[in-house]
Length: 624
Image (cartoon, rainbow, N blue to C red; front, side, top):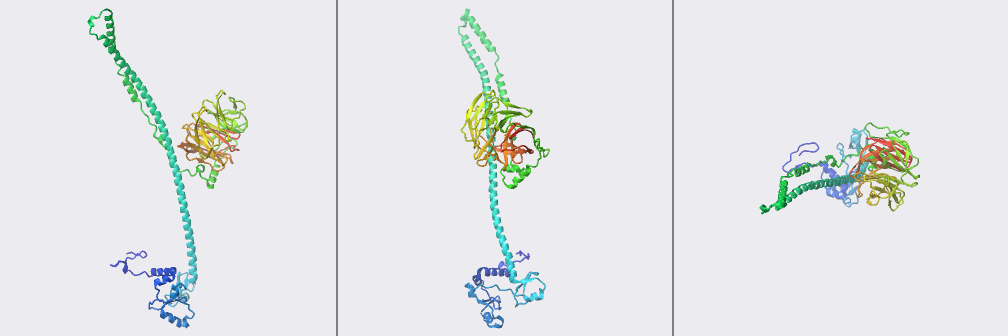
């Protein structure tokens, strides 16, 4: 056995540990602990012996003054020697057992001066000594009474215990916080699982649709090949039928009796049969059709088209992106505020200074002063937009490469337009208020009217790539009409979010800017929905920042973050992965004129954006 302290090796006897010497120090500590915690019961259990004489007789009394246990004889002598022990307080063991009195703790006797108790503590030597030792060996040392030393130690221990309790409480709270964070982390990861599942569902649906198209194409090829083969087969069957009919006519047993017209007819039939027999059988057409069918091959799409995306950590330096994904602490908001001031712009032109050569850029190539405060804006052509006004009852067309504006005249004069959108054939849809949307042909003829029940808000319009009409009315859903406006095809719920503006993608998804009811009417969220109302994780802006999306013809999503207090506009580019927006790049910051809480951004081409605010229109070039 190896001692854990001094590493001394001890060989055990046949009795093993029973033959080891008792640890007097440990036993003393145990006895002391029992005495402190158990009182009289502990003393009975310890069966305290007399500490005055060497007879090791069971003690019957305790002298508090001497801190000594006494047997019967020592107690009698103690009481009789009044010269030495007068005034000493003696307590019977029975009183201690019954709890009438508590024993003191016997002081340790000095090993040098055996009659003296160690009542003094030497701080220099860190030991307890008696008074005589202090005079002889510890005269210049720093000393204090044992009581003071014990009180000081008690204070330190009490403080330590208090700190331990506080630390334990703090650790327990931290454990609770850890479990809370664990739950939140699991919730975030569950959202990732849902996003991946949704992305997979979308991909699978697209693959199923693609498979259906390919199978239909194969079926069409099969039908065309069958028709061609049937033509070849029909020709052969018709020849067989003709040969059989002719053979029946000429195969007469009375051939020798034929004469005159009968003989001529018979000769003609024989010649006809001979001609049929001499015709070459078409043995190549069927083979050609077979070869053509065999040449039809399937070219699989690039494997990367099946990539659902990636799980990666958000860039910590993109503080705004953190906020858009749900961060709400003041530190993040402050970081975003600092980031918004990184780029400096020329306020007079709106052109921004790029932060680095590799950073994607967006620059204002033209700034137009509008004659009135704008109400709505939509794409007109690849280099122009149509704008209607808050007060004026007409529509203007503005071009990025011309300095004149044109009035759109193919609608009734003085009709108030709250919103508008052009379909691919230049049919215009106009919202005239809270209940009606009119469709006018390019020549100005009204073709249809969509009537809805008013909820007190004006109708806002957009369109899909297939010319469906998308309509919002500051409610928690988006209505989708067929291109004619006669049929309501879908009502896409947006749950607890109020749809403010809406854009559509080629794949049928819709992108909304929205806000929570009773939290103002400025859009602070951007989300992607399918036609059933399913959505992924949405972007969330901090206070004082509005979000306005625009979808280009490649289904890329631009999101403009408008800082109303500073007039800064930060545009980010996102890809749609499933029903989630994955950031693709951040452009340099623009400083524009923004004085209201209503803005609009549209994509004209993959490299051109239009942005409208109050009485300003900006054409912006995009450089990736």
